[in-house]
Image (cartoon, rainbow, N blue to C red):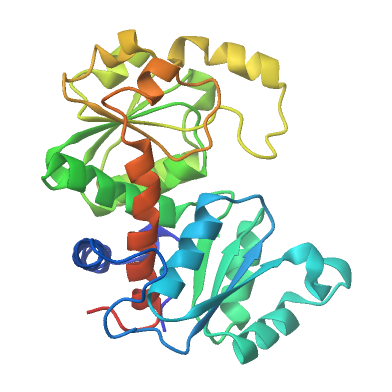
Length: 309
């Protein structure tokens, strides 16, 4: 049994193995319809319990499709429907029930502590579908997408992030260490990554490159990532924060400072951090990026269930 909580805790060889498996599985599904089961139905009879404390579109749908295509089933819950949320049942007791009924647990939460508490008490694997400091399933899928489009290892590419420092960026930073790629981060000084993640990078003898000038950050970039400036449950003066990021808005002019064939990716949902002519432009691969969540999450499930080929 293996958990999938943070990229930093998973060996690079295992992350690479997940991506390789996802590549094979995507190719094998080219002629299959959405709910047709993969050959061999490797997770037949298995049930994934999904619990959401925060809104979700892509994570919810992609994990549902992932387990179904592997021959299993999914049960989707909201914490306010359970005794955990309304009746004050402990995480330990809820974990015992989940371990009794389900074979795996995917959790999207507003608390890193809850993820670790569930891990402590569960007897089944837990997958972090998003927490305040991590979005590992999103970023591993993004690595897959970059390599699929660019047709080369991400270690040979220059990756750039423009925007706020959030859970997606934290996982992208972890990926930059695990996959050894250069990562430029462009954001206002006040919004640079936290000391904890930067110290972890140094501890692993790696570097990330911080720029408070967006044009400098994107120079010679092969890929530009972004995310909403105002995240879910962001308790800030929103108008003021948007103003602080004004010069970091991704426009065609900014893309012009990157390589000519630079691609744009965005984990969605989008806000006003990117203009339509970039988001909907020919160098944008956001819809392919979203679709790839299904393929990579299938391989993550197989990894956690000990069935990765």
